[in-house]
Amino acid sequence: MGVPKRKVSKARYRTRRSANRYHAPQLNKCSNCGAACLPHRVCPHCGYYKERQIVSVELK
Image 1 (tube, rainbow, N blue to C red):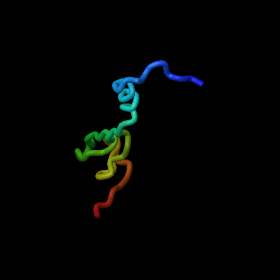
Image 2: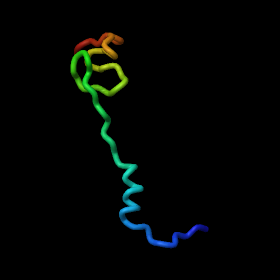
Image 3: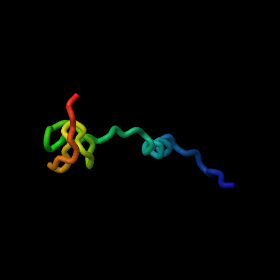
């Protein structure tokens, strides 16, 4: 069974753990209405994607 020869330093331990931290979703501006929306997805506010209307959205 493998046993470490030296104690793992705090910096090395924390560097490994830093990849698991939470990342907030990246938001882009819609090219049509300017609302914040996820990239590569239809805008939920206006229904446009790549300057073409994909979905008709009804206002509530």
